[in-house]
Length: 190
Image (cartoon, rainbow, N blue to C red):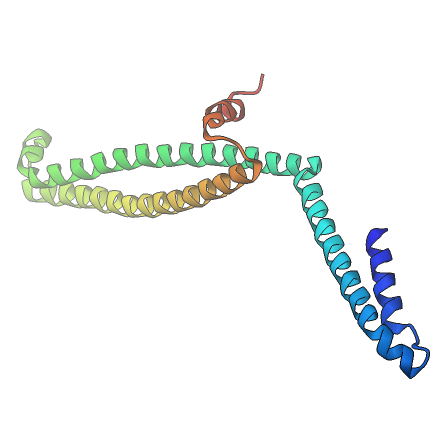
């Protein structure tokens, strides 16, 4: 292995015994040059080894397949979250219409009393007010719950889309290829 050879040379040079004081003065300059050259060689080998390891990791098909699978799962999760968001928005619309209905009926309670044709108008009005107030209260509670749920779904959707973007960049998928990938992921399984 080239690194072991350069390392062995550097180690041998640094620990080699010196024979005599006169030889030490003469050989110290070449020895330091040899040591410096060995360190330079070793540094170059370490750099090339690091670059090779990075290339191998980047080209590892198993990691690529794992990342691609993660990307597909994230895309499926995005589709699920978008469906959930759409469902919540539709439910919000329905609940808002119920709330408006209750408000309108409370505001026009006299019309409701005429339609009811009850003999005891005060009891009928009290019953209708309780029913419409209850409907309004339930609708407002459900609106608050749905709005908080919608906010949570949108936050999760935003985070999931950020993860998808990071995986897309890791896979080096060009934005023009996204529509094709999305069709593959969202198409029903035969």
